[in-house]
Amino acid sequence: MPRQTILVGYDDKDPAKRALQHAVDEAKRAGARLVVLVVAEMPLNPQGLQNYGTLDDSPPMMMPVAPPPDVEAALDNAQETVRAAGLEAEFAWSAGDPSSEIVAAARDQGADLVVLGEHHHSGLGRLFGSDTAAEVEGELGANVVVVD
Image (cartoon, rainbow, N blue to C red; front, side, top):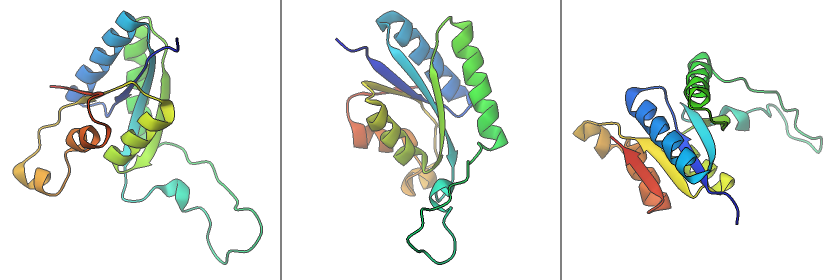
């Protein structure tokens, strides 16, 4: 039987820190594989914008994209938390809309469980769809845990 996979969305804020701790505890309990994802919130994914000029039949030249400093710091902090718990995890980052990136990563990784921190939004923020946890829950369903 394959190991369960837990994906945790992490942004280095207090709710995400609690979500990471919950995911760590659950991974220890279940012997699950843990994947930590940090998303650099951007309107467009910069990795898709690397082909400039006239397109021809030659293959596109891809340049490596390094994580922004705040994403690197979040990844470092998440690694410290996971190591302190005596676990190993996979760490990844992406750029784009957080809810879309988390859903895509959950599907790509075959996640059985997604753990997110509850970020309290204003009514205006909810109106404009900035509630990442609600969007991910709506897309993935019952396999999402939101930690307050």
